[in-house]
Image (cartoon, rainbow over all chains, first blue to last red; front, side):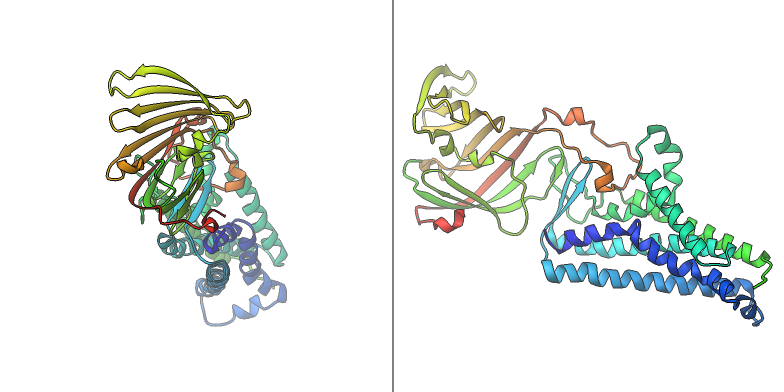
Length: 231
Length: 197
């Protein structure tokens, strides 16, 4: 047991717990204003609705990144400080991987970078749902429901469904940060330092998440521009 | 080997098991008569199969009631003498041991041991500059591996879409091996008992 392993376990909260914290803010960003009755007032300012939405989303994005930086400081550096560092052992359903101590830290930086994009996707989803509501509870619950249901679907092993539905669920790609901890090995099973088993797949997942962000954000702006603001 | 009371050896350990990806480890091996053996990884973690403490041949021969010997003649290719050892002690973990002896150099080159608890394992020794002490420069330890499978719900694996997964029936009955290449031995200079604790 060492700090690297502890942080790896904590990073798994990226699936459920962290999205909740992100959804709390992003889901409240528009719906909260509508609930308080300040949305209509804001629209009287000489800025376009698109600009307003982009600023609001940027605020959610800054919160998301700040949350992740805090998590990185506490989970990674905190664990390293308390539990020390050593080789890292990664458990997979099909095997065990061991990464040398000196080869771990850069993988965490890459993983946290990926996690930022993954959480931004959740943030964009909550932001989109926020446009439709006049109470922030609705978008928060709806976002979490979608994340939980999609995560369950992502973890189910049904062969036909693996190729048809699973690749299109954003939750399937949110765990791609783990790809940075899957190392290549030679024919004798000896790990190759500094290698990533399937970097193109990780980058593809990253691309899919970025597409999701743009789709959610674009849809949110499009709906908001057409929205009849009554509160 | 009779001349060796203890030794400390540095070496590189390579693990080759189908479901383990591990780097080459720098290890220190400590031995003390009669059968104390410890493998220390100098800078990290190492996976050592259960029963691999028998990586030292002395452990096979540690048996108070001794063995019955069956001379099976010489191996065709190598002319090594094949001797089967059947332990007299019914409670012994070792069921059968077959050793291949190089009669010219008086060295055990290979040993196949079947145990009750840890399956069958095979030791192959390559000797070099420490042959006079009966100590190998390279030890290859082979063992049977069992199926490894963890539920995906526990590991939350990232499925990258590639179809590289090994069917579990292929993993079954595969052999794993651990190879230690020794770089130097320090012999009979005394090894503290605390090392083995």
